Every structure is written in structure tokens, then in C-alpha cells.
Amino acid sequence: MNRAPRLIALTLVGAALLSTGCTFVKLTPEAQETRVVPADRVADCERLGSTTASMAERIGFLKRPPERIEQELEHAARNAAADMGGDTVVPRGEIIDGRRTYDVYRCLQ
Figure 1 (cartoon, rainbow, N blue to C red):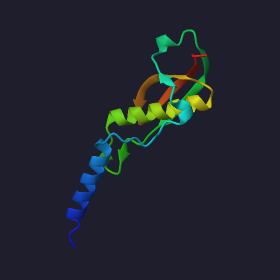
Figure 2 (figure 1 turned 60 degrees about the vertical axis):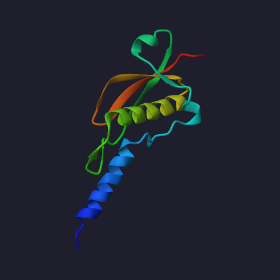
Figure 3 (figure 1 turned 60 degrees about the horizontal axis):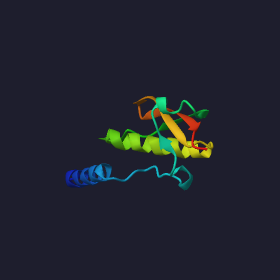
């Protein structure tokens, strides 16, 4: 039994799913207004703490697009910030192995 056609079909379906606009991490209603800003925009804000978000960089043997990983990390950080009573997150450093830490602030009250 030749599995090559099935493997090719599954690979193409997986690649199509990875390239679409879907994200695996959805924003909660509370996080809709939470924003991501650079560190120089939180001077007058109250720091509430930090959160670390992580996402899979690969699904099977397929590497996920970096912009999707970044978007999902931001969604996870915004959700966590809303749970902490924050309304703003600041990325701390680069994404490493699908992980990034964010500082959480309350700025808009």
C-alpha cells in the first residue's frame, strides 16, 4: 500500500491551514481593548507584573510562520493581562523557542 499520496495530501492541507489567517489563541472579551506597546509608552503606568506566553513553533514537521507565532503570543499575553487587571502589555525581548515574556501595566484608568 502506497502512503505517499496520502502523506502529500495531508502535508498540503496542513500547509494551507498554517498559511491562513486563523489563530489558535483567541482574545477573550476582556482582552479586546488591551494593547501592545513599546516600553517608552508606559512611563506613567502602574506595573502589575509579567506573564510569559509560549506557542508551538512547529505542527508536526511543518514550521509555523513567525508572524502567526507573534500574533498568538500577543493574544495570550493580552488575555493574561486582562485577567491581572491590566490594559497594556510590553514585550520583553525577542521570541525564543516560541516563548516571550511581557510586562503587564494598567495605563488607561
